[in-house]
Image (cartoon, rainbow, N blue to C red; front, side, top):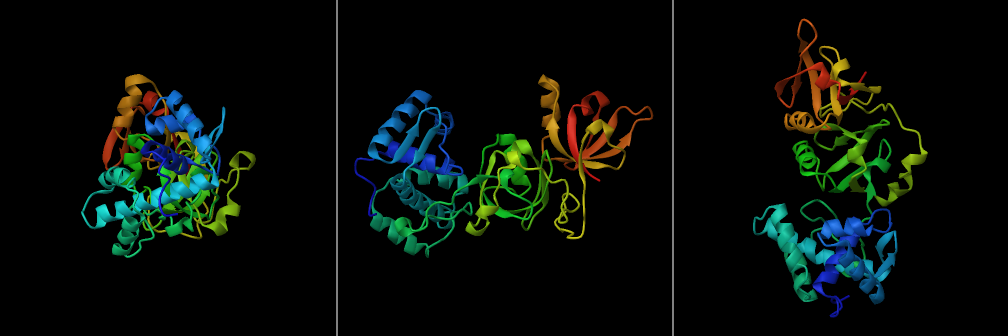
Length: 336
């Protein structure tokens, strides 16, 4: 393909590549999700998807959503190749950070010259990955986009690369600090009914709640795709021989760890856990989250007052005192 169709407007191109990015397991992308991502009204999204269906690029299914036809996916990959190459150029040659480069590349990707893109590719020495560590669609679309799956569908022992995270800013700030971000290679260590333990390769072990894992999307190798399962029809694992002490970079292959879910107020002095749920309401809940009590945080009981209230904890490098009435609204996972 030498260029995109001259009748394909920039707006149409944006719809196509957004559907491609949001597509999971080859399932239709709900129009509500598409509208939220593009910050456009659902009515406008509906109208555009119907127009794109007339071009043969999109399949629109009422009440289900929109998906790309083979031709639509080919065009999306062609546009995304240009976007990714411009991102590499902006980051490696001009010193932009990834966020700035992404925004600028969203404009440059619409330049239709295939000669310019081929020369840019050669100038960059034919990169395989964009700055986020995601594979760049190949020239001529021989290598189409990786199909993403939600993290919660992976099994212990599988490896994957993080593609995108549909989480709020607070959750993303926590994950980024732990070295978990798009482009990160991960390995699933163990799984419980409430979440997963995983290893950010070269970094730390993390415990993520189910609320996190179902909103994180990853790509896996072709040889492992047959191992991806529908977890709603499977039992959950409660131990795995590869799990290690939380927060450590070393993995002990011989360790067998049972993970239990408890109320924070039940922990004894010296016990540690990983926050998986913060309850409470209004200002009290907001105050606790502002103090670092967010899902994924490691917390340890340091000491208790003579009458057992309040309790002093260590979290994120500082000490925090909570009443039992506050601690009972926080659930943690504890390795026994």
